[in-house]
Amino acid sequence: MSPVQIGTSTWAQVSAGDTHTLAVRADGTLWAWGSNGNGQLGTGTTTREFSPVQIGTATNWTQVSTGSANTAAVRADGTLWTWGDNGTGRLGLGYETPGYVTTPQQADAALVTLSLAASRSSFSAGIRPNGVLVMWGNNNRGQLGNGTTSFTANSRPAPVGTATNWVQVSTGSSHTLAVRADGTLWAWGNNSQGRLGDGTQDDKTSPVQIGTETNWTQVSAGEYHSAALKANGTLWTWGYNVDGQLGDGTLTQRLSPVRVGTGTNWVQISAGNNHNLALQANGTLWAWGNNGGSQLGDGTTNRRSSPVQIGTETNWTQVSAGNNHSAALQANGTLWTWGFNSSGQLGDGTTTVRNAPAQLGAATWVQVSAGFYHTAALRADGTLWTWGYNTGTGQLGDGTIVEKNSPVQEVTLRTDWRQVAAGQNHTLARTSQGFGFLSTGSNNFGQLGDGTTTLSTRFDRVSPLLSVQPLPVELVQFTAQRSSPAQVQLRWATAQELNNAGFGVQKSYDGRSWQRLGFVPGQGTSTAAYRYSYSDQEAGAAYYRLVQQDNDGRESYSPVRFVAGGPVTVQLVPNPATGTVQLLGAPASTAVELLSLQGQVLRRFAAGTAPLDLQGLPAGLYLVRAGQHAVRLVVE
Image (cartoon, rainbow, N blue to C red; front, side, top):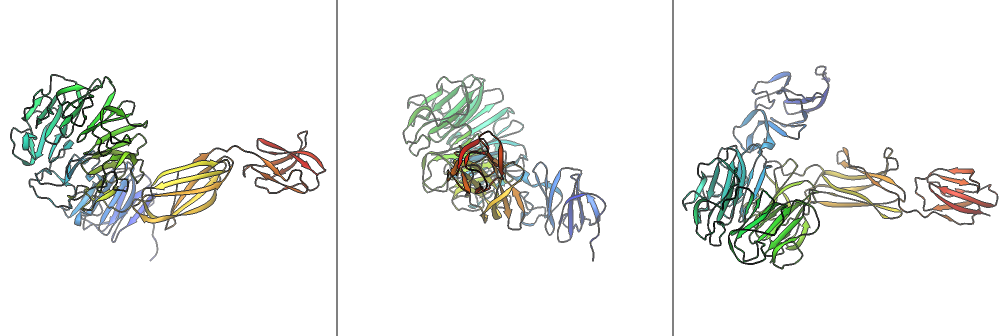
C-alpha cells in the first residue's frame, strides 16, 4: 500500500474517521467520501461515496473532525455544525431522535446565548439563538412549562413546547412570563394572586396566552406579581398588590393586566419582590410598591401605590430590582445601588441601608442584575463582579462561600462575559465562547443546569449541551510591567487548560528577532484558573511574548507586550581603572563606545560586552557612551 494523491485541488485540512473521510479545501469548501450508513458524510443521503463530493455550497469552512460515524465542523463565523450518528445525543443538537442526521446542523443553535433568567427560587430559563425556550430546575408549580409538576433534580435544559419564536423570558418565584416574536404574551406556573394574568388563580403547567394583543415587547416577573410593556410605550401590571406594587393607585389584587397611569413613554421595567423600577424614554427613573428596606430610593420607607420619580437625573439606562434592594446604571457607565443591605448586597463596603441611589466606585459598568440578597454586574472590560450574600451557597463565583460587601471579581478572571442573571442563591452568565452558559451557587434542584445537584463556588459549570471538557489553554490576562529600574515583571492567567505543557517566555529588542528567556510549566489539563509570573533583569526597552506549548509539541503565541526602558544610572567600576572596567546600569541591548574628550570614537564594544577592555590606552580622561548616556572614565 502506498499513498495516492486525491485529485489536484489544494487542501487545507483533513480528518479520517473509521470508514469515512472529510476535508476542507483552500477555498473554504467541504468535501466528503467513504461510508455513509449514518449520514456521516452530510450529503443528505446514506449512500456511500467513492470519491470526494462537496457538502452543501458554503465556502467558509475552516475545520472538520470525524468520529466513528459522525462528523463535526466549524465555519469561519465560529459556528459549530454536526451530523451523522446521534445516539445518546452526541451531536449536541439538544435531542436524541432521530438516531442519525444526514445534513450539517448547527449544533450551537442549541446553546443558550440570547437570554438568561435566574429565578428568585430554584429554577432557570434561557432562549437559544434558534428561538427555542429551555428551562430547568424546580417545577413544583409547573413553572418549567412541560405540562407537569414533576422534575428531575439533576435536570438539564429542556425545551418548552415546540415554538421557535421566543424572544424574551422572565422568571418569578414560581411562575414564568415570556414574549414571542409575534408580540404575544404567555405565562405559566404558580397563579396564586393572579400573577399569570389569565383572569384566574389556577396554576398552569404549560404556556397560556394572556389576552389577544400582539404588541407586547417586555415582561418582568416579580415575587407574586407581574409587569409588562407594550410597543406603544404603555405599562401594565397584574397579580398581588398588598404594597401597591401594581402602581395603579390602589392595593387591589388584579387577575388580568391593568394599565399603570396614562404614560406612553415607558421603555424598561424590572419587577422585584414587591416593588418595581422603571425607566421612561427621557431617561428618568421611577419606582413604586414596598419600601420597607428603602428599595424605592425616594429617601423614605413609605410604600407607594403609584410611580414616583427618583431624583432628577435624566440619564438612567438600565434598572434591576432585587428582593428589597435596587441597582441601576447611568449613561456614563456608573453603577448606583440602594435599599436593604444586610448582606452587603449594595456593594458599598458596609451593611448600612441606603434610602437613595449611591454611586458604587468609579468603574465603567455595562449591565447589572440584582438577585435576592446578592448582586452581579459586568464591567466594560468584559469582567464579571459580584457581591452580597454567599454564605454556604457560592453564588458569587469567587471560589468561596463567604459573603462580600464590596465587588469581587469572579475567580476564573474571564474578560469575555456578555450577560449575567442573578437569582436567589445561584447566578447564570454567558460569554462569547462556544458553550451556552456557565453557572454557580446552590444546585439542590438542578438550577445550575449542569446535570448535577452539586453546589458550585465558581463559574465553571458548563451547560451539558456540549462537552464539559476544558477548552484549549485560554489566556485571560497577560501583562508586562517594570517592577524596578532594572527589572520587568511578567504576569499572566489562564481560565482553564487542556494538555498544557507550559509557557516559553521570549524577549525581543526590535519586535522581530526573539530570544527565549525561560520556560514556566503549565497545569496539564484543568478547569481551574491559574496565575503565573516571570521576572527578567532588563533596564532597557523590550518586547515580550509567551509561547504556549501543548504536550504534543504544538505551539501558540500570546499578544506582544512592550515595556519602556527604565531610568538609567550608568556607572563605571572601578573608576579610575587600569586594564578593564565594568559598565553598570546600561541596557544589555545597548552597544558601547569609548571616546576621547574631543568626541573621537576610539573603540566600539558589542552589546553585552563585559568587562570593557582598556589595554593599550594611554593614561588620561575618556568618555564611555552607552546609548544616550555618557560617563567620564579615568585610565591610570
